[in-house]
Picture 1 (cartoon, rainbow, N blue to C red):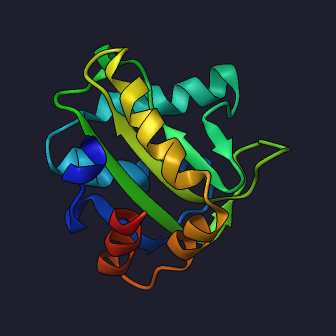
Picture 2: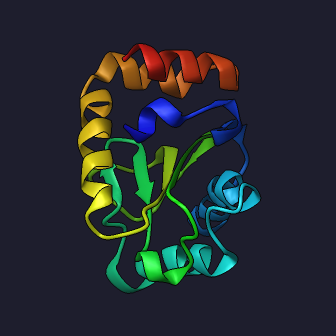
Length: 147
C-alpha cells in the first residue's frame, strides 16, 4: 500500500499559494524533488483543471491533483500539502481547498488502489480535521498512519 511508504519528506504543512495554479505547483514539489515527476506533469495537472474543471476536488476542502501517467510520471508517488490559507479551485460544492494530495501513478490502474486507501482515511471527518490542523510534517504523518 502506497500510504505505508509515505514519509516526512512527502508532506508539506501550511504552505502559501495565491491561487489554485500556484497551489498545484507548490504541492508538486516533493514529487518533483524526489524525481518521481517532471515539470511537464505539473503543467498537465494545471491543464486538466483548465480544460475539465476542478473535478479532482474530491471532497470538502481536499483536492487529489493528478494527470495521465504519460505526461511526466517517472515513478509512483504521493505527497500531501496543507495550505496556510485555503484556495478556491472553482468547486462550488467543496471549495476552498485546504489539503492537496498529489498523485503520481505509473499506469491508469494503479491509482485505483491508492484511491481506495485514501477513501478510508478521508471519509473520516475527525481524521481530516486533524490533518488540516497538523502543526508539523511529523504530526501529519502520525495522524495519517494512525488512520
